[in-house]
Amino acid sequence: MTDLDALRAQCPPPAVVPPAPDWIRVEGELGMRLPRDYKELVAAYGLGEFCGFLTLYQPGALSEWVDLTGPMPMWLRGQLDEIPSAARRPWSPPCNAADLFAMGVTGNGDHLFWDTRPHDAPDQWTVAVAERVRAPWFTYNGTVTAFLVDVLGGTTRVPWFPPGLLDDGVAFTPSRLRSRVPVTGLTTRSSISTRAIRDWARANGFELPDRGRVPLAIREAWEAAHAGGSADPV
Image (cartoon, rainbow, N blue to C red; front, side, top):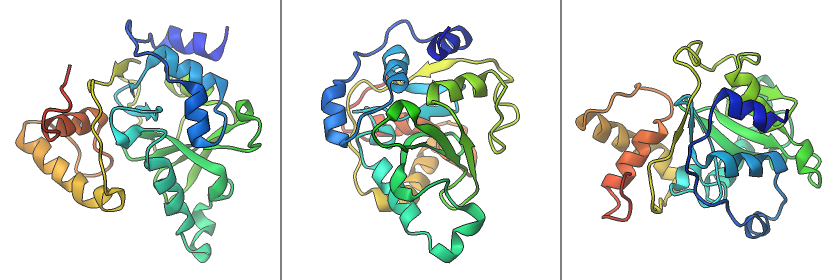
């Protein structure tokens, strides 16, 4: 049984999934090959959240917040580069920032990265998780699909993931956006727009925590409401 087979058994994928990206074009745009397991994972599930908590970035995602080919991976790498060397020791990344490529995010604002060493062997890339950019790291010596299998199966515990993550069972919730919502101004968006999204969400009856990342479903609802008709919830 492959890791993807195991994940399908744990967490059934949606019945209908958007067509897989043009991987040749995507890899050309990124300037690197991507792991085979990741491409198979995207083809099987599409964009969405595992357990309402964990979202993998995907090429050309309808929201730039989770677009593998959008600004987020490079912006996060820039944030790592900006940490003063004297401040790195307590929470040093597992490798140089240039070797890390962001590919996922959680409801608490944790970021998932590939450790892209060796660069010419993507099927050997492993997973690194940061609670925040300037916080301790968790590393997983395996593919992102194997990581999902172990986390959703309860055999791997990321210390800062919620203790009750699996209490309501394991499920995958597909993304609700069906047309692209461009978002610009990333460096200021992280602070100003997040506050605006929280205020809008509460005013419109959504419940969300005071801290951490705004859940994908709420981001999508906000983007749909502010897109001038360019995005409609399903």
